[in-house]
Image (cartoon, rainbow, N blue to C red; front, side, top):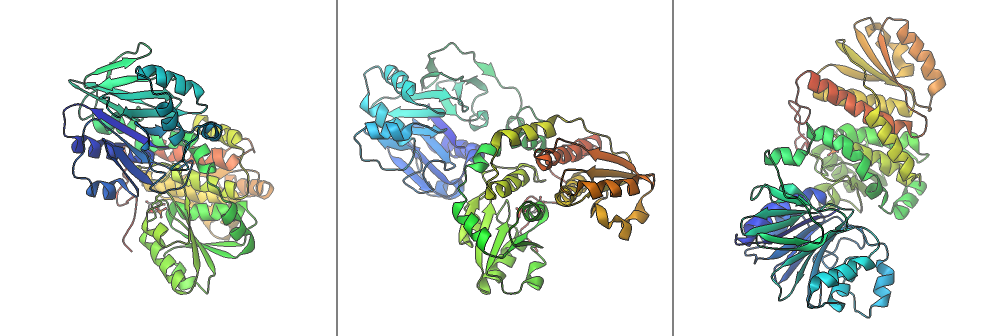
Length: 525
Ligand code: G6P
């Protein structure tokens, strides 16, 4: 995913650039760049990049990148300029290699985008709209494009399969991947549709198809959330969208390391549950540890694998540093490839979940689970999306009692742990997880008719789990079985347990996005 912002108007360019880039940063944040007559681009975070920018001319086009074709490097960062044409792009061009071969050109980058700039430059006609029409007909794939032609004051655009909007103000126009990038300046917008192309110039625009101007009513915060009541709910639904991008990460080198070594996994909170998922799912010789305990338990690890969506959790960072002192090599899985954790690692695997705002991890957890599937080359994207849909659509049950237990065996126990954590952290109701087979060794004394039990019954360990289920039912507890088809049961059930917690938190009037006493990224011990 990438973010686009372009501006034509009389405002100070720097102000619009700053706001717009920050607003679309969630769409990708490994590199940043803009073109305002001069090409300025680099790898790294938007904030660091902006510190170095003093003045921006108008019109400009700008971009935040999440690498797909070509690694994270300054030359692969957008915009891409060929001759008089500069382009920023969100999407992927499937036939870019063939197109590159057809053009006699010295390529500056490994991206699929540069070929678009080269084609537009090659066919650059007086009527540039004809050029765009011709070039986009040659592209196979997905694209949202913002284009500047030197000597021409307009910003051109084209759109297919990825979002692109126009913001139309008085004497000013915007092009952006998301409404939020221009909402402080104008609430009038046009949502472009597939096949649309055209240009904006100050307050004017031209589109090849007739499109209606709409007005957004609401505040910026609401725009960020879209039509969802909470960020958490939005992010639960976004799990459907992230599957291809999570699986796009090439794990061949990492897979070999996992196959041939004993690896300690270090993580906290939800990421710790992902570590156990990896252990139950695979045959690798891995051992999960809670990050804050790891320094006491560590022996002489050769390899450690740190899982942290933020890459900033102090417990995880400290444990990694201790292991490094002992000579361990570090692989990390994080949503922030320029995080502290990443900087400490020998290998960094991007989680590719997109930005997560809700404090309770949802889509980043899903991305961690999918990473485990990718690692064992279980990549049935369509089936996984179907499983997510089942989790999104399944009717929820009501939790009414004062105590809630989440139970399961084998990999279902991981679901139980995550289910209990999600539930307690956003509802503030005591919820605990136990391995179903462990009940008879103590916890069973807690069970009575003031107890709700959420029982995960996926295929792993199911036969014995059913025996445990009867033991619980016999104590008068109210048992809710989480039933889904076996195919990717864990994926459906994960979405379901998130919705269960979210729904219950709302019923109790809690704000699931900001649970009391908690923070998204915990940088204190
Ligand atoms: C905090 C958050 C949790 C998260 C944990 C680990 O406690 O509230 O949701 O799972 O940190 O975060 P990390 O960024 O390291 O995955």
